[in-house]
Image (tube, rainbow, N blue to C red; front, side, top):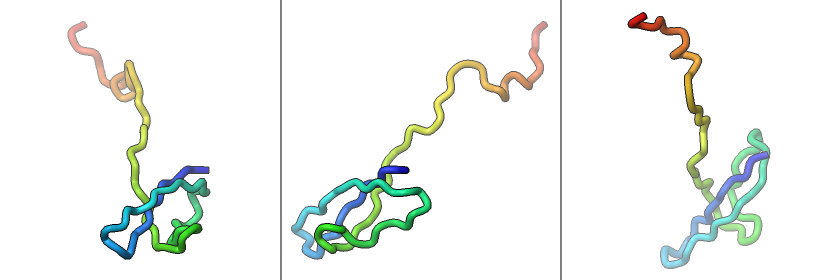
Length: 68
């Protein structure tokens, strides 16, 4: 299960949007309305961690060594 961040799209430009989190399956479709207020919502994309590796990679081990 993943946690998604949503933001309401207020009808009044002076009104601040409300942000909230929802735990959903990755296969579930995105929400279209806020469960509390009924306002339309958009999913907010946030940065992920990705894969971080340190040290020798598999690709560098395949290249021939020079200078020996």
